[in-house]
Image: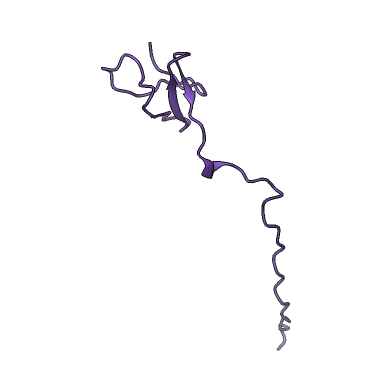
Length: 80
């Protein structure tokens, strides 16, 4: 049975000697670049949980600052 990415259904590259994916190993889809893990209970590849540095911060927690305006410069006239 080929190992397939749950998102794009592409076959996951692996060592042909392995009959089943290892539940402790990390795999990666070479098409959609998702990190995958094998779930031994469901016997399927699943998308690995995202790391905390990849999560989105709440809008209320972000600093909200407006950019400062640049001072206006007077243009030289073409006749000068």
